[in-house]
Image (cartoon, rainbow, N blue to C red; front, side):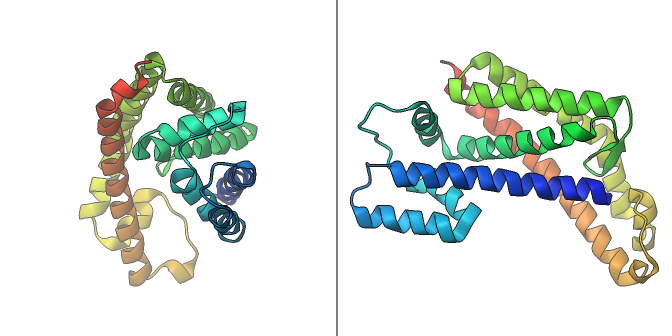
Length: 236
């Protein structure tokens, strides 16, 4: 990953964390359905001082599930979020992060993009970013509106990404697994400075590459299986 891509990815994490933190903090401060004021104060302090992690913990576990007053639009979205199964909550947060990350990458739409360690050039990079941006929006709308057609679009997209991963990335992973560690930089197309060209760096890079790719493949399969299992949730 080049410096520009690293900065964009780091910035997207910061923007996403800040948005989640603001939403959680505003909701906690205005929420009148805590059992007592001490519980509310504890969650507000957790959000303030633990930042992004505290905000996510509040949104996943800390919110009172019953809202007595007529919900505002934001509160209504948070109520829907609170009613989701835990797995769909996690996928929602990942979807929001991916949307923020993709939106930041729209400014680099005419450059190469990195997909699972592979550099995608023009015109595929532009098509990839625009499709990913659209699919993220569709999936988030489907999650909150429980549209079955939205689930189908995302499910098909996940299968396509899996097929692309298997065709383009998995052969590189298998090659890296069985090749000598000293060949890993050449296999993954990584250019490094001389101080990183030693047996320890080779072995660490090989381990990180192979294990990361295999974990990514397993996670993709789990997400596809989980979405299929929860397809009835989307049938509004």
